[in-house]
Amino acid sequence: MTAAAALREPGPDGGAVAARLAALTDPVFLAEAGWDPGTRVLSLPSAHPLLGWRACPSPGCGNLLYGRDRECGSCRRGTTARRLASPGAAALAAQPCGVAACPRGRGRRRYCRAHWERFLDLRGDASFDEEAWQETEPAIEEPGQVSLHGLTERAAAEVLFGLQQRTRCGTTTDSVRLRQVTWELRRAGSAAISQITGGGQTQHRLARSLARHADRAMLAPEAEARKDVWDLAAFGLPGRLDFTRLRQRWLRESARRWAADNLPRRRGKIAAGPVRHYLTSLATLSVSLHASRDDHGADPAALGRPDIESFAHRMAFLAATEKISGDARTRACREVRHLLREFRALGLTRPGGPAAGLPDDFAVRGSDIPLKPDDPEAGRDLPPEVMRQLCDRLPGLERASCRETRTAAELIIDTGRRPDEICALPWDCLEYDEPGREPVLVYSNHKSARDGRRLPVAQATADLVLAQKARVREMFPGTPLGELRLLPAAYANPHGRRPVTENHFGACHREWVDAMPPLLRADGTEFDKARVVPYAYRHLRPAAR
Image (cartoon, rainbow, N blue to C red; front, side, top):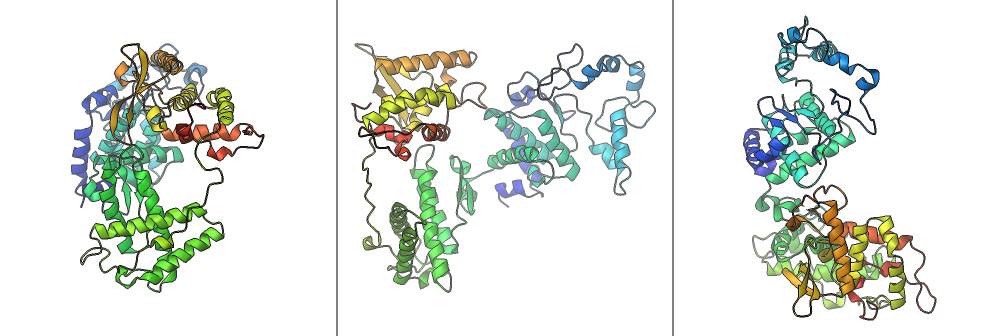
């Protein structure tokens, strides 16, 4: 069994998985999260920016507050003081609760009051095993506490490691939701978090997040490359790659081998995007083979030129019925031609390969590819009059999203750099060249893997950067400057280390453009808003910029 499979399936490898996750969990984080290995209880500090919770401000209380409550229910009813000052507390403590993990006193019953009430609810079930319940039932958790008592070693290791990774990613974790996940693990006797089936939608999201982080700790590129759906974290990339749309086994295996060869050659944060696009085009060939052949295209040696013609006719039909655009038809044919050539270049059509015996005439010719339709508004330049209207409406982008989104748009317009390059700018990205003290923007060209690029900018652009630097320093005064971003994300980013993503910026920009009044050309006709995309700013003429 592979390491990744061991994470998803309970069994003898569960102990190895637990040991691996435990080795990857930082003791410093465990101390930060209040982990006590003796009691197996997390005592999450209320002041923690991501693990914290609101405590009741009433003197001597400290109960957890929900929503917008200003005091807990006990304080509103005036019962907190009486509970704290109840007589006989020392005598009760001398007789511990019958639940092994519970330090509370039990009085004249077998259990403390809270566990006695739980016992009364459970004892009517014929399958209830009181002795086993005493061993696995957790202590009564105080505000902010989450008990892992009664969980398997693997499930507990997944919870701790997943919590660590969520916190490092800047994601907030609600102690109440985390407690509900652990309750469900105990109730179902689950060996791993992935086995949870009960609970509400919110608990499911948290459980999936914890399990996903645990899964990724065991990923290996060699094992992932044999799957039909890849978690690209195994290749150091975000997202997934899905091969299930390729119905023929030979085609799916060939595509997997091509992708494994192609991915390391690509750079940037969205390196998998082009690969994903090629697979979409290859899926159109797969659908055509499945629909046009009696064997559904299962035998590569039986294919030939007529199958390519069927594919070309199908693409022409889809374009004629407007199910796809003319540009999509052209692009799909080109990409299928490229992939079939790549399969042969990689030796996949040789004896023993997944596409062994694939005939040479099963290939897309140049004459099969239609000419790309002419763009009625060729060129990616935005007319100067359109740019003036967009610049005048930039305050609306800030109102619709945040200051960082507007600043990103202004920097892209001023510099002509790619959105991903601007979004990833560090806090200290502005320098001055000697002599003359000309301001220079220092950025990284991710696409070409060229760091420390220097771009002279106007003083107005430098002033924009300086104002943003001051704003970020004020927002995150405790973060070292070397870790700050010029354009920090607005959510799940308590220390300012995580930048605005290109996708988030693009979505905000699209909503802003779509919501604004019509954009007019110089002759009064309406300009197509679909052409106003962040990358269009890269192609501005100097006069428009």
